[in-house]
Length: 465
Image 1: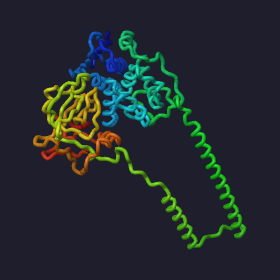
Image 2: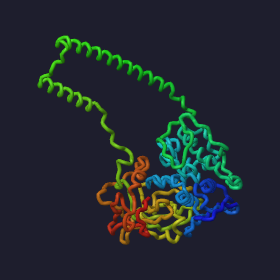
Image 3: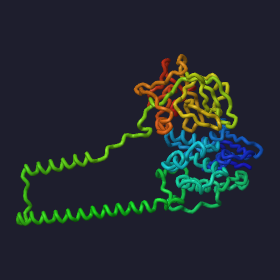
Image 4: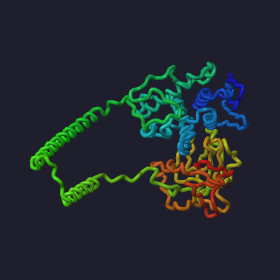
């Protein structure tokens, strides 16, 4: 099967031999692109690998990268956060990788995460939400009725857009090939407290209020609270009425005493009244609660990060992921660290082994496809993540040396605080490459004792993460 056009800007071959969340999500997005008429799409039921070839010869075989490129170049920029901050785009990539490897529910507390967000990466629906939805409905262990209200609300919103995409596919052969699990035949009805429809890239309140299965759980509590508020309001109204009556009586007395004429205040009386008013203002200000110091990412700067010079002493392909390199990296500790990097689409094994890099070290170890990764190799990447370059320390910088940024001195925070307070997520938007490909924080260069750190090929304006 193929979708034809007279002016192709790219050719996509969908490998459908092994259906997975990645292949289903890719197929669904590719066949629903607004500018699909500029894309030649073919399905290959005998291949498990998909490939995208653009008109300029650029070729991509990684499913995640293909999705990002398709959305960016064929009319769905909102789905990949094209106009969002680098931190949001990075979050979209991270969540998409977790979703397509079926690690989302195991590596993330979805209910808690979505309690402060409309969608996975913030207030806008993205390709990560679509991939996560398809991943979850393909898992027998996922039961919507067992989820909390925040997951249910997110699921309902995302389901609508997936449904609309599936309905927009006109070729019966493609629909049959994709076999998207549990996608309803029509758009779901609006839910009280929910939305009637969600569009890709649409910004929504954070979070949306959802009236789900537990909507009556706090009903009695709210009702009691309402009574207390009414009682307080009635008391205040009563007091106000009494005060108004007293004021009226005073006014009447003053009018009688002055035969209907307003008494002019002397200069001393005016000063006394002004002093009294000022005293009341100060008293009110003293009673007001003190503003709380920010406890989130805004309270930190780049000095919270422990970024060091490292050397990759060994690298091998992850056995269960076509995106990850597994690495042993010397960062000046007693033993090399094990770190997984999603760089197989950009670097060959021989280009990775022996490479001098910079590593973010104070991240908690987490499992990536069964491989325990403790840290992150920092790279510069283009906005659509189609180009990625190692950020390299200069020759002469010692392995284990901590990167410094002028004007931002301080000891790094603990791994626990970096994770709990989402410190890196709050700082990554200010990590970019400047002139000459130099990595920087707010325009101030990453420095070592031997000089600055730079993107391997000199990429300028790239996000660093």
